[in-house]
Image 1: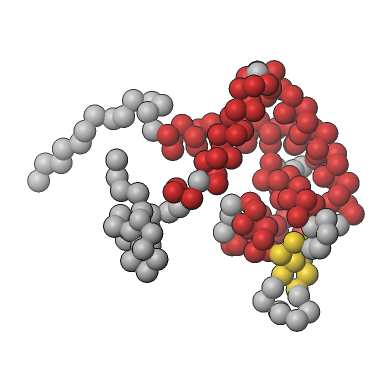
Image 2: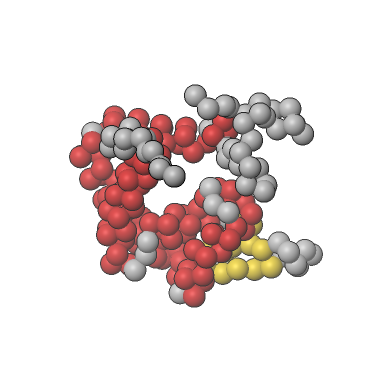
Length: 177
């Protein structure tokens, strides 16, 4: 049986591919800036979010995962080197052994402060390259994309695509095109 394939899509026409390529490039740039501290941008983001979210009370793993747009297993994987390097500490809730909190240790705070100085230089370079207004508009667009509820996954449990809407909630899912 002969297979027929359409012509390849031109570069830049796919939003997902373009976004992933830009994300990889920007991540590589920030990773290189943070390299003197042996820190990756994801680790810096986690340290910053633990600091921000844990100012009043320790932040739970669940709340940190939500804030980072990560599932808990990915978050756990990313926390391991930070715990190993004694930048973060995990603590189990006294009353509910299933609930865990992430705490920033003193060494983690010191590394975060150093990383913030490097990060600020990186941010200034991004603004020089793209312009302050364009960089601000890009951040606003990316945050809008990250928080857009209409872009929740269309795959239900079991791997089937749900294009008819969620029968349990009555919420309509966007169809194709």
